[in-house]
Length: 320
Length: 320
Image (cartoon, rainbow over all chains, first blue to last red):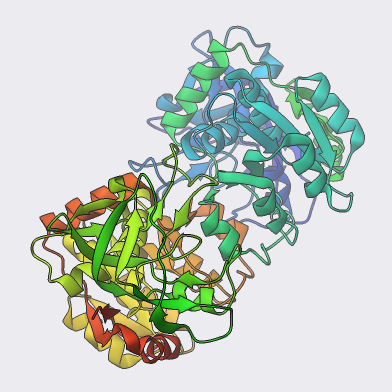
């Protein structure tokens, strides 16, 4: 088959012939489309433990199995504890071959009917980002109708799913970004307000405008994370699913305990999370926001777009 | 009446005559004994907002009301949200006059029968520390039988209650201290193991000895707090109820999200927490650990002992 192959770290992956080995106890899915995640970039940069080469990249995918369109749960072997993944947990695209190819083998329990209200490309964009946002909001932060939520870095896949899920649940959604254009787009999609976090004292401004935030969903962390503690209401929760800005500094224990605040690490999600996420997306007819669509052989153009961080929504790859 | 009065910050309080005003809608308790909390020290040092002078200090107390011995819940006006205290929440001893005197006025809903298995002095030691430990462990960390818990700074009132509550619940208890003597005492009381946190790489040592910790209860925070993230098991929780070592630094978001870890700020407790704490203490016949007993007029000797941090257990004051 043809697939996007990574042969070694720090080199661009290439679209070429690849012999995909048949695997017992797994079903073979003919893939239609896939989507990029930041994880793909990090793997290419060698920032993941346990990389083996050559590997077919890709975590998100949709395809056909026995004539039915199916969506694949990329989070596998979660284990029996809903609170945390087991040591055997893995995500498609490393160490197992992933979704950027003509075919993939996966266990049948990880395939689910494609949501009917979605196009193939929308469905391809859903799995990993949808799963991550769902777990962060529902299993971890336990969001409630009418609460106020701030979603940082709007435009990223998980952040946009978080916004859509929060809006569908009836929360008041605030967003942040370094791009005013992305903030405007988020407001046009239903966010109440947004703030450019490159402005000085942005958190004081947002505190005034929002009257305080109940939940923050963040993937940046870093030196300004401590402002979140000032921004949240008593009893507030902050969910962290990434750390692009590095370690958290200057976190006040006094604010933390006096506000009875909660910091929640969250990543990916369980099989239960995935099934509930699909049910939620079907119930509220949520449509993933697509930034762009590329032919699979244009993978390196697509990756460059992701690396520049200019996208608003998911970058989708279409198979030949 | 006679009482311990603070007339201004940074000056030692004194035992002297004080006219306690009658308050409508409150009951008058004749106090038998009281106990010290770090809060009293901080108030004396002017580190609390909203201090008014003169004030009768003291949060913990036990006394008699209509011939019955009663214990007083010092956490008042919590409000209707179990997740966090209301803006009206207050603790006896500031801004309301506290327990270090012959009498106190308080609302009748805050008095409860003294646990029968406790002496008057043991009962006096229970309220604020027991409440704080109970909320941290049960309402916040939701401890479960057979989990492994690390309690830092053993010897302090809340830390010892946390140890006793965790042991009664069937957890495996580890402690830390800068004093080997305190660690030995904790082990003699049922802790499985303990570690001196002044040793380099103590967390690696404890990781080896314990096989990983599920819950950490901490009141220090500071620059070494980040070691806790390395020490906890996947799905672990860290409860923070104090911050004597200052702001938290260098917290890794990656460890936080990959371990699905949870940081929980916790302080004092609700009326529900207090009632449940009393029920728990009665059920398991828990006896507060007393460090020492002073006559109320020796308040400044007692405060000095607390300030030096040499106590193991609660410091109790006996009324004349």
